[in-house]
Image (cartoon, rainbow, N blue to C red; front, top):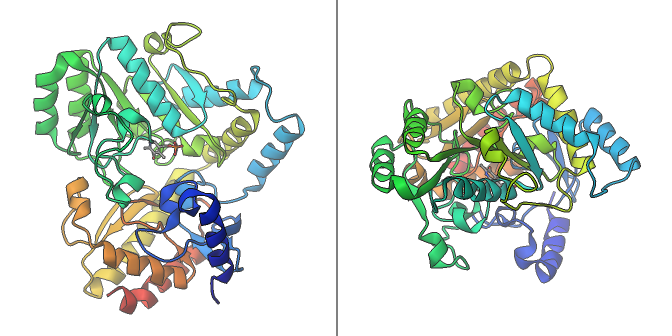
Length: 428
Ligand SMILES: *Cc1c(COP(=O)(O)O)cnc(C)c1O
């Protein structure tokens, strides 16, 4: 079966939309070929416009932790639509979602809802700058915090995928305020923060990096950041847009028992609808308008459909042993894929935390962005296409995570392992 209809649609889209897509990695540029246009998703499967079925590990880049079109989420969305889609006035659904978030994350005393992860990180940075009356921001190479001006330096995700260096369109005066360090490098962070302490407003970090492929934090890395920032009156921002409600109820901070000053959320908390959120210490959050002077607003913020989808998703996730199931299935899947690849003599480094994982095609352990860049991206492209031909949808870039959902059952996992085994000759 060909992908004739996707090809036709892509040609049409390219004439109307830059690159044919509304978010760059969707264009498959890093792996080559024509992106599939998706018609429908049900549970663990997506269907392209040519009628082909794929077991989906892209998961809309993280949000679809229950799988696609979960009946309870669809019902919540339908019910919300019937009551009207936006009012520009407060609604009860906002309280419901805010309460779920505040109860799940001890460090989040109050939370503001926005429309994307990008808005959440941008706003958190502004707030940190206003609170500390300082201007510099520290981030880590290969971490992605959305596409706000201050955070595009040495970024992950699509910026890594396309090898974009620098940030055209961002004034040097802005870039100069962003300092980027290697992930997991405790010494570099200690030196820089010591030297620049008085001018640093915030340190922002993905507590588990997911946008250079998955790179877990090494012991001591996040703890050291907490100590250094506390000692210097610097705001520590955990960007949990991917990790929030992905690795545990709440965020990765719950797993390690740490309290950042501010936390950014998105993806899962919107249940597949556009959303973002940022929250944290009450004294900092109180600086936001209308309580305080830091302006931040949104016509569609706290939108009733998005809050309904988010709350429905979180309620289902919170029932039963969701995270144990995700952990066990992901562990088995990764173990079997790793065994299949390495017994065929293909060097691979599997980085996994809970239900997010990346197979880096390198023999070395990947612990930062420089390490991720050593991976064989041409081999990744062959892996991607060979699996797609077997009906498995992985992310179209080495520098992204794969996600398991609660709807991936044992049959899906067995089919995925079989597909990897069949694909080995083409990956080699
Ligand atoms: C996806 C992501 C963002 C950006 O969120 P958008 O909703 O795409 O703007 C920010 N930070 C992290 C860690 C992300 O994974």
